[in-house]
Length: 496
Length: 95
Image (cartoon, rainbow over all chains, first blue to last red; front, top):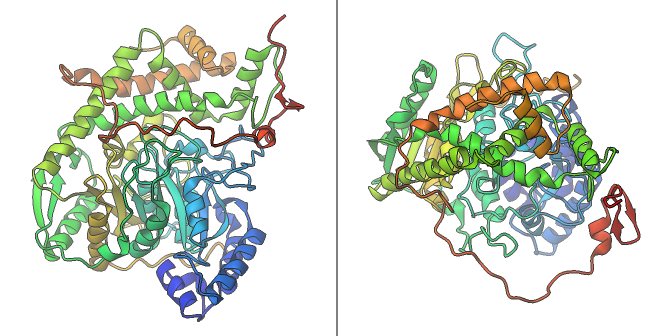
């Protein structure tokens, strides 16, 4: 085989199974790609020796007929997942050289199923960001370039920017990611990849560094819908160590691909037609509607009246939960420590030095909205509005809608430094179409729809009923079939 | 609602994050920009609406009341910035 990094995850799986290629060959090809792509800054920690050792074990298992569903497939792991014996940073200085003595449940599931881990992928610090510019380890550069503008460093989206860039640059066959307000779907849309955020409770959160616990959910970023279905099947499943993880069987999601769209009812929410939304995004959305209609689905205009309140609600609830979750970084049990005059001084100096500006800002907002005198006005009110946002979706699904189609982002990717420099809210607006899904705990997938006039990818989002990821895979597969094929960028970064 | 520099200092102290004088003004502006953004929620009619408790109707799971873990002191202390024997070490708290 010519270039093993050009296989999809499903193709690589089949090539291993039919012994056309070995896990060691496949892994070596991806290690070479990873090491030649350091200019993109996708990985915080590379683990090539571990990957080769795992690949050797996979080859032995394949030979003896004991191969798991992901046997020998090289993946990248977002550096928010704790990995036993491998440094885990959350892209923050505050964790120092923290090396977990345990494995997160989801990454453990991937290892159980035979996956090979190439290393830990860059992200926004504590998953707080939409461009991967808040990482303490420097920004990730997207493999994509604007046409006629090769010097602009395009962002890969965030917070899972290392994951999306590494998958689009063919450094790994797939990657784990996490999504609190859009952190899987927005980077997938920015890089022409497929990003699946499953239903809240579908994947265990145990061992994943917590940001906002009522919103966080793990999911995959891949180059095809089939690859996404394969990865999610391994990642999902009940975990007694996460009380919000759901004890329900995990379907074989691949079987949902290719199912008929006849009789499926797709809702198109009028509130997502924001004032000032670009004609390019509106055209993509109309195109998505046409593709699903041509495939046999019925299109219905729907109303989700509280949509415009989702982002303000998020910027109360997520910082509130973050301020509580991040209280644990105090210089006592792990991570860096600064000396202070007394123990409070130690906490304050450690946290001032360890957290970057965006994380400090969100912790302070969260502290404020939870503080005495403001709790009811901000936090309780936001939790009530969140109920209304969820009721909007409940009503639409009760009326017989199977899934909702929207754009994934209000624009294609931008370049480093172009957003949020003077006003943090500008950057927050990236999540305007994705954040409602986290508010309601629903599954959502971003699937490539084509390219913008400037040559950068655009994504469509499908939102499903709770635990009906199968319908999303069916619909996303239909869009993938109908949409122009994504040609991932040539490796201009080699030798940079 | 908006914050002023005195409130910013109080929040920073509650959050146990040291802030330098020169940072306070910038933080004040940024926090007020975010508070202005979330001000939109003031216009939502929330009469009779319950705050959300869980996105999914689920019973809190309870595990059996048995010891099923433990004896991992070295694991727990492995990443400590300062330790002595089986303890985390912190600056003196009680005079």
